Image 1 (spheres, helix red, strand yellow):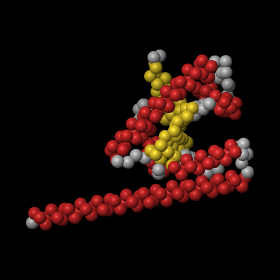
Image 2 (spheres, helix red, strand yellow):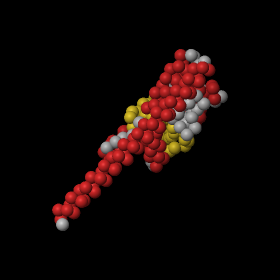
Image 3 (cartoon, helix red, strand yellow):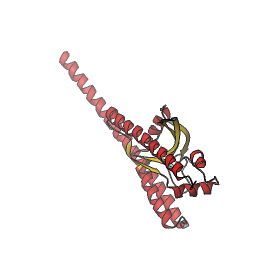
Image 4 (cartoon, one colour):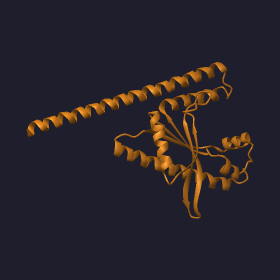
Length: 223
């Protein structure tokens, strides 16, 4: 693979184009929901492409040949998008939208919210294929979309820092603390979701009372 740098550059550009396509889709979705609902579940979006060293390390770890074909056909997270939301239900709303799109293929779903990793990690991962219209025709590029809440993202960022600080050999006592911190983040997500539902319920009740009051007023004026 290292002897085919020009081919790798061509492949890397395609991953970049795929990320731009995804960013555009997400930006349009964000704008539509804001205009229609006055609210968007998307807090922020980040993109990245794995560097060559990380790609090589993963190929070796998985036992795949060190070739461009292995990258294309065996690795699904070379291009990655992370969408961060405020609430857990927003994660599944976004995922449902992606599933309904005709310009996106979802080939695998990994729900680490329903089934967290042993260390407490939570996120929804979608392995997707993005169509690129090139001069030689349409080609589908693999990418990974991670969707998580602010609390999940905060925990994952700190876990990543600690993981590399200890050179991937985190003491068991700290692993236990991380797991407990993940549980606390999940409790925070659940509490904020409950508060949101309570606020929305009160708003609906207020609107209903206002509608009834106006109806009574109109009835009194017309009698």
